Length: 331
Image 1 (cartoon, rainbow, N blue to C red):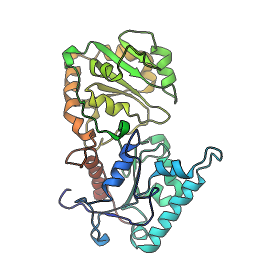
Image 2: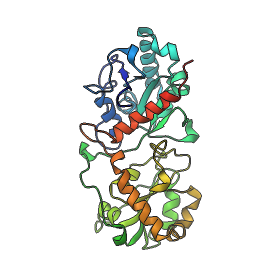
Image 3: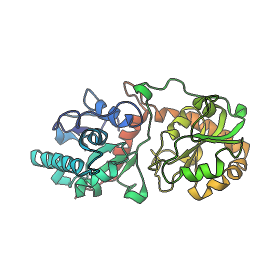
Image 4: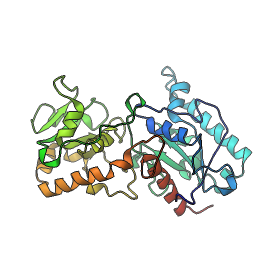
């Protein structure tokens, strides 16, 4: 891939809606990827005839910020913008029409990414969609779309505090702290908030605790979906070497083409929430220690490095696109 794969980035459009994106907080991966492909990058080609894939570099997050209004509650302006952008690209170049968009890709970490892709039928049905909201129930297609990790860069700062206590020093069974929103978390709070010292579950973390210290000292970190299936807690758990327990039915996990998530995490059905303690307690210690060791091994695939380097999150995304281009057949 590193020697052959070339991407053509369309130059049409102006910042902030195109060629820019959020580079901090929970949608950071969207902006970091877009910005990475505005400068010098060995995967970029300026000759579209040599390209294996074509990048539509608009930012859904910035569209929500600049085009959506709370008063209207309408996403029509976002859909119009994307439709117009594709029409311009299709008019200026032959490549969109040649493949009906199948060798093109968009990237969005905003929850509305799948909805915005409906702006053009071939963007939704044929183009590669790189999405944090990789939900099978919302039209995500694993054979052509790719799932993104949600990485929360607080203040835009890259994490340098990786790791945690060794497996044999993690005395707490499980931990979660987060807001009460979406369909899954109310069930988690109903069964486990304030109910058991082995499974600490909080809507609001008491001041006496440190969020990251609890992750670094717990065996398992519970990662329920929020408004949508993905959550930055999955990556936070990996950074803190806490085995993720993912509670999000229909969620296709990031980089699952090449990563065996069963080796370093648990993806449990939401219906198992009442039995969490029983399920986690019955996992043999040698199995837990194996998962803990594997979490450490795969950390590098979820890091956003500056500049980007081999095996980091951005390279993993590129590999996901490359795999889908290998499987694609032109119309």
